Image (cartoon, rainbow, N blue to C red; front, side, top):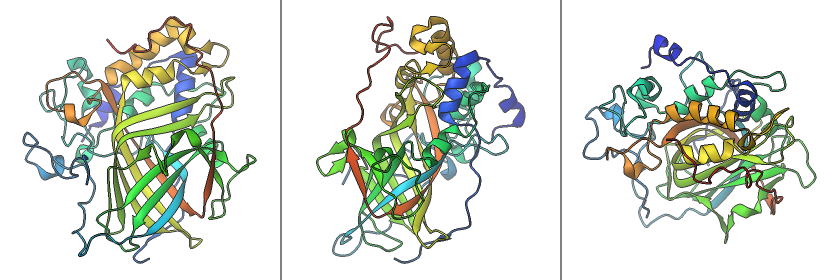
Length: 387
């Protein structure tokens, strides 16, 4: 467990307009609880095992598992599931309520409490506080990072990211395939489609099955999505899925002149979602998503953002340097799980978020708008990363 005084030691770095931009993109307050829900009781891969911590993993069982249920027993005669259902994400919560521990999973299967127990070499011994895990080995260094970027400007609201989602300005469709409709299914498919907006003509979603979300066609791959699970199953009504890559394009705040999106690019992502019955009778889900965000990709996204009254970050060398100085000390994991425990430098930030979703009957798709890269002539190398 992280002690309160250790959290306080993180401090807060004032980054002027940059702070407002990053904080508004990532959101700041934990979402309020939805109406009570009840669990639904009816109705071959390269991915790692959810419970296998490897030969060098700690002996404590609580520290050697990701935090998802094990797969159910294989069904006699093979999987006969043929149910396909789409869910629209209705809320996202980056776990930034400072009164509770952040959400997340134990993505490195390690309870990090010291330099020796870390699965990678931290940037500096002084940064250990950021890398220490929360209860159950939960990894979420991104939490403390955003806390350091949380001095908001007047133009930004703490729940901006979720409010834009609920206004239908962007979204996500999660498609579950090959499901047998029971609380246990040892082999399903899960695909994720970023959505450009709600409605053929932009509109606010109702939150029901009739909502029509417009998927981003650039993520289409044959009859699937480029964001698809390599391992997925249902255990006691809990959907578990593993993704080698996962992208979350978030719309930029309306206060900025940029129409670009900030794309959260995660690797080796675990999803855990409880199937529920919503108060209106519709099917839904509550879940947690956790993965690794490389500092290379993070910096690429941050420097392309526009800051009100300042311009694009990549064209403001001092502001970009401040962003790097804030982000880089927060590295706590390797960008890929396969590189854990190899005495390699940490090159990524662990990230976690909670989400809710509701079933929809269908969705459509269209090509995304073409948006020029504002940093082409900024003189920053595309592979610019933390030192």
